[in-house]
Image (cartoon, rainbow, N blue to C red; front, side, top):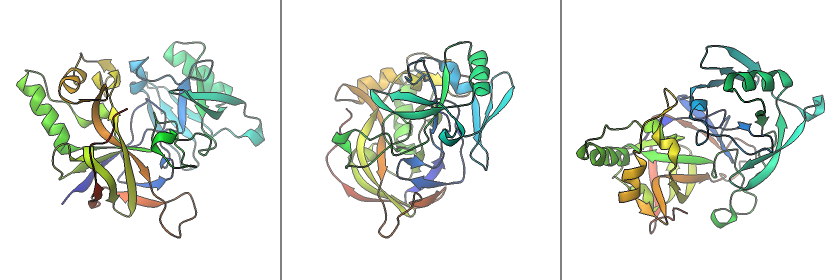
Length: 289
């Protein structure tokens, strides 16, 4: 029986993960997932693609929603959630061409982050309104939105597909890789390798998701998520050779949660490690681009 074996959220885009035992699902992703991001002066997201060391910053979320960040130096900062009513500055945010409204963190946090990263122009932005960024219309229904993740509310991977990939890597005299390289939200065990390519709808615990697109992978997968260092061409080289679809090296599947009948608030349900996973519908291989 397939089970949910891992849950991960990333409070700040491209920073280190949190791995709770349970998490609330909202229409735009796991609660607290990627509601903050580091940006260039014009609002364009700065990620591990540009600065691998971002992965060494460890964020946590306080009970009141404030962000707690520990830098690689060990220095810590508490960042309150910015509020327009309290004078927070509005700012343009941009992720892969999608432009949306954000709020700047307080000046103290901006100065701290710039000093820690070593860039005097960076900004820390918060997505105050999760309805402000629509999902790409080719893969979504009207009104569906996403946080500051790359494109979709959640990313799922399977342990069987990672095992298959690692078999290829070991056969070519490379070291096997941990799942953390792929920065998933959900990790599923007990499936056949690559069966997620054909998912259409899947139930995880009490929440149903639409599977809409395979995840085309980038240089972030070559980054050790514990040290923030690039580790060579794998797994991109092997994925490009064996899992190249629509000109993308694919691993994992992007999900959009469905709203249960009668549920009107932001909380669509709660996922728990150990939840049963049931594939409700399958089809042809999903697109990767």
